[in-house]
Image (cartoon, rainbow over all chains, first blue to last red; front, top):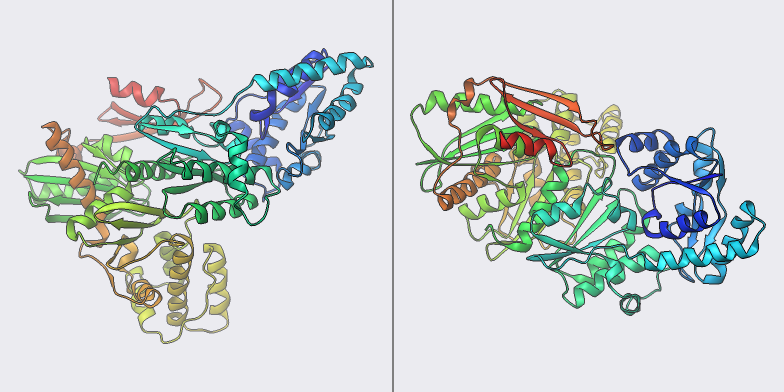
Length: 297
Length: 319
């Protein structure tokens, strides 16, 4: 049996877990290619119009993958931390896909609560049972998968250049180079290093979040706010760039919270959508770097 | 001693010639009309006819078409519009604290403190409330864009128009117009809506202190200028060369770099008679499928644009 994993949304954060789990169960795993124009076009064609760009792109990944596998993972990730949730659109992702894309193969859509190891294991047991009756094999696959996930350290931490900026935003906006038009490379070319939230310890992020009048119940919100507040307070960076999908509800709140916290500290929001022309993004990035460097004027 | 600045924007292409004191000797404002190369050439033709034997010691390019312009003319500096506008404003008046710049598809606010950019913001991916939208509405109402502002000044009462989205604004304007409101009142309402939208959106959270410079093509619109003054409560200054400020900044930056390098890359005004052709193709070497544009001057390729990996844009430079 071949299982397909679309290279979209939280793939960038959690692919070692899913990939190892299925491989250890003896399945062949296929992954969709890196996001490209064809995938974007497919995604825009199938997805409901008002969704954000990363969701449309996820639809595109599913569309190019669906005929290459017998079963496809549409991860309904509800939680990666206790008492917190992901974005509301993740909860309905399998339904969106099934109602938008015709001739879908079987899908794995069981909700994933990864707040504790025990809860995640219960997902693994249910999915594993579809594939094998051997309980110990499932347990072994699950343990291996967690080990591989722990080894995986995504993110950027480059403060060896003249200037450093913190790149804030949902992981797929940071890691999908097609979505963000390779912003890390653009910044590096301008002599700017990039640091991302993965390199600030969880406990430090928690500390910052305590300052809010209400505990954020979205994981993205907590990470983005806590990260930005920390790099600002500890003066780890020269400026902050927030990559935000057009029409993102979570970001509309988080960006305001960050701005309120950091006052006059250099901050820029980059809105991304279907545009493939890069002139607008280049202008903003260059001007921001000019401002940080104060070299030109 | 002359310095040339070229600003290729979405709606207009502007050229300026500065003398050694950075004063404007000539300014040319041409509608880009979708062909930046032709617009630049047209500008060069005017310059060549008027200033036959001048020597340009430095050139700079800015605007959303700055990369194509830079390849075309051999620019010494290629700078974004924010920096260019700030440089030009500070050249005129070191006291400027805020720049409002509204162009064809961008609107910006630049906050200057002590002669450096301390903050800026641009409209997001949406171009509501910029020059191209005003153009479109003027066309729809059958009013020359040059008279748009005068209409607004003739009105005493503004009709409320929804300002946060160009599409909403247009439907609201049409609804109001079909109810019988006169054009002047609708236009005044539109000016107020654009200013409201600008201040709530681009200018949100920014400390707008005088002196405020209003630059970019839209600054020609007296209706918008007055609406800004009403909303801010103080004078908004439209500098004499408001519509070519980006080009002035580019010329100054080009001069700085050329002087530092001791030479200029500028190719000369004869560019006007070259034959430029561009063709585009989809690169199939990887899954990105970039739309690559190749630019030829007299059958010799001079540059490529639009590839993500740099394979094409680097290749031609090497030739």
